[in-house]
Length: 357
Image (cartoon, rainbow, N blue to C red; front, top):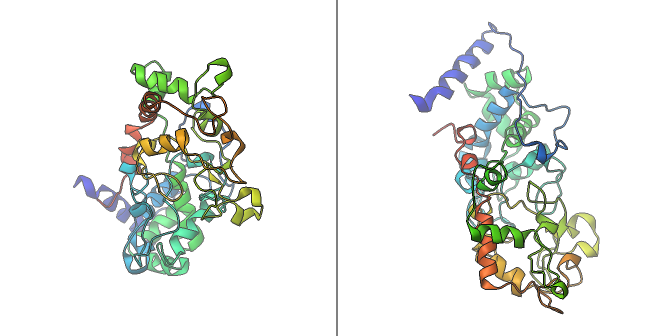
């Protein structure tokens, strides 16, 4: 019975609207997040968050009717327990053909300006169109998805509640999905609890935090990993694009495809490190299976190229070094710190879970 509360509520609401007995104005959805995250949020004026819109978006996020053959949903490639990734190098869609890039984590999207690894979508509403319609992802035109939902007994009333009309369209589908995704806020990791005095990390994690936050200066005998240059601030990312030394000749042009600028070749959007221990494999092409492999890359295997980001050029803990040259203990300490960024309340939040289960 507990699993079916959403169906009972939405069914009653839908029938009420269809019979014309209820007039109901959408209620504002109040977001809660730390002041340190800042208020430069990305919510368009024509799609304010409402309780009804967020609820509808959650159902649609897990709705397989949005895909060709009713095979998959957004939640197929973005699993809550994995911080909304899928654990695969490349996701597979309705035709079982792998996508070109690794599925990114859906976390703290409220502050993101441009989406995908190459930043080609300026907003969640536009971002949603690609996975919904791409042939190797959900593979279904938006108008077909709208028609299928329109014929259901569940959705017309819910769209009426969220948008003031029971007419379902692709535009309203993407708006509802965007509303739900903007609520996916992670801000209660053990690191956050440490900052608030509610948790005390062990010595390894504290050493890792120090290394994470420090730029190396071998001439001053200062050791560091220089991570905050790209992953600084409370959200643990800076919305920039970097070539992080994976290949001398990048196989994927990355940001260059959008800008046409050669200096952007092999540059990709910096992902957040929140919940990073849950989101393997890593990088845009999922080439690293563990955090140990990631740290080894930055420590020893930065590959020079014409578009290598300046922050990685000759940044080292050894004079004249081309990579960080971290010790094994330092790498382990940094990984211990990164594990503090796992937010158990986020991956177990019932408001984000699959309501059809």
